[in-house]
Picture 1 (cartoon, rainbow, N blue to C red):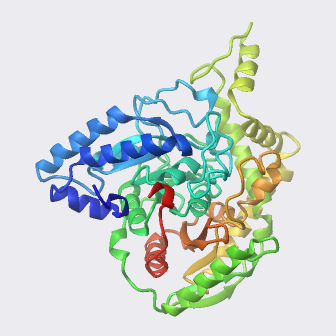
Picture 2 (picture 1 turned 90 degrees about the horizontal axis):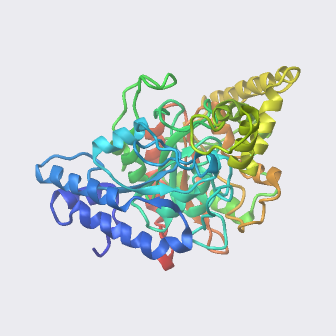
Picture 3 (picture 1 turned 135 degrees about the vertical axis):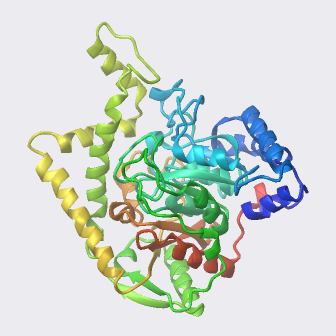
Length: 486
């Protein structure tokens, strides 16, 4: 079992196909690592050991028949926001405690067809609302590189589990940076696909016009492999794009000579950590050494992105979360009549940050304020998208930091929501414009904390993003797992 942590999905599948290891052995290897290390990290809400072994046994039977797909026998973790049949799906919220999903999300269905082994459900900010995983109503996940610091959010459990080697890879979701930001802070690869590239059917909705499911992995090649399985049109999702899925893995290993890299001045701001700035500037030079051309661009409406996002996402959250009232799903508080039951259920079931966003969203949608806030935010969103459209006339990809700082200490910003919201300033515009974006590790700060580089592409340009990210990753040769978990 030596060296398994260093192997990517394609290498593990090769070992499984050659019968040098069984899926059950590989799954037990990761289950043992979870038992050994997750008490310190708290990345898993529930470990599904029996299910994982059963799925691994089925994978071994399939492999013995000479059958198998890209994920056959590969042990993965799932963010606890994706409905999985006959399994509790809580979104890290008390209000969904005990909710058993009656069906599989499309991405889960596709991964089951591919033959993965389901290790367990990963922690997150409640209903994906947060940037630190401190808003989970069950536990606070720690960053494997420094257990006193946050792993990012909302997919903090997924990023921490991947970084510590507690699964081969994981699924996360990204509404305003919830894949890319934790990937950056935990030193992993995180890919948010083009809006509509991956079906949202079975994803418990936060903000429906922004949410997207994607992979968090230890390598660019694994991100390509996982995206290969989950991408594609789905008639169950009306926003799903009816376009064929390219062979993402075939772009791994291609060079980037002649690729134009856009560098937006608005993403190099006052208050950015100096180590982050330096790492990203060094990354740009590395792209140039590999034949790419750096082009200065401008995205002038970037300063309005955070305000626009927090009008749109809270409005959609207010609407989407209205269904959790104690009648159909999960938790119900007793009351003398239905109105009291509603009030008590929602007061006790939702956490502080979720309540804050529901109140904000209800306000911006209310009579007399809709035009001033929600309609105006929609107009600014159009301007933000137009900025990117214009920029992509001059370049093929855009390079930026993922986060203005590295991981902060647990508890440091929990009472300062505005500062917390501003930490997503570089990731939010990508969601508002519906573009693909990914975080790739690009170094460490003076404290040894990971820094992420963001690569942004045109709609459906995931292949070029992966191609460029792999060239960069190959040059960097960064350590992927902290020494204490290696």
